[in-house]
Length: 236
Ligand SMILES: [Zn+2]
Image (tube, rainbow, N blue to C red):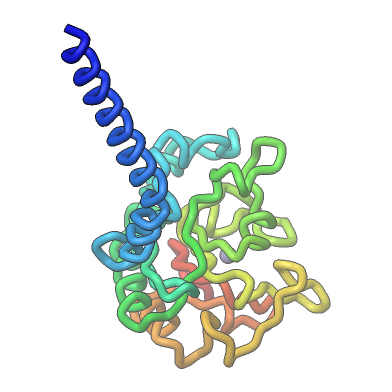
């Protein structure tokens, strides 16, 4: 009996030691596995997810003055893009339902051309809220790209085409809004040679033009390099 017990204790101890070894192995190797998982993320099959908001989240905090008929026309477009970290990311942009095809077309070209886009996250994201409301300044300062936002034009006066989901702002920091001494986002500098910057001969600008959009970089005052729009009534 004693012999049996001893033997059994020995087995228990062996089992215990083995368990400790397994736990230690799992614990120590976890960061290695995590790193491997990170390294394979960021391709077209497993893009880095910048935004995966639900419909409820995307429209939460919308200006209550937005007419329901405008709100109902808005669609969340899932887009993939090459970013400044040389990896492929996935985000979401909100536009009018008639412009979904245009947006997909332009983003496909940007991906093919490896034109870097910083991030594409709807403006309802917590990071771009001030007092619960959507804040374009916060989105611009974060170099974020976005579309629909029920708001007035920068500088005020009348509704922006963003209010109808008929305008998008891309790579705001490389492509600032400039009106006289007012540069938005603050501190941004327009350098045509910098990565992610729009110029007249840029394939993304050309793709928008091909689809009948207007580029704010063609305007004189303000010059709005980040801005592309396709109003219901085209500008004269
Ligand atoms: Zn804009």
